[in-house]
Length: 62
Image (cartoon, rainbow, N blue to C red; front, side, top):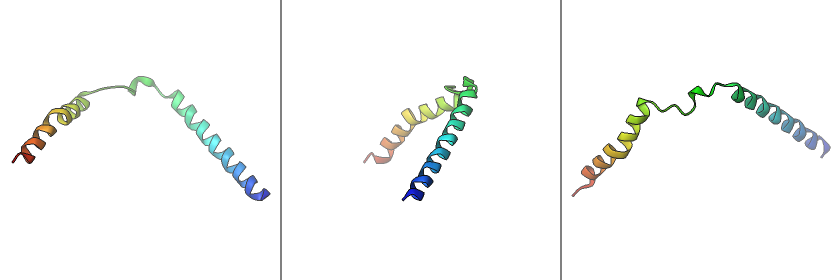
């Protein structure tokens, strides 16, 4: 039982270290790329909001 608990503690410590490393990487990243909304995003929104419903109506209209 003690070996299992020790293995679990080592695994937990490894996971915590990996999460802390990832958080440090994310904190050092530049925020300029986050939240950028470009032309491709607008095209996807227009396609999803206007064109696809129109095509669905045409497809299922009796």
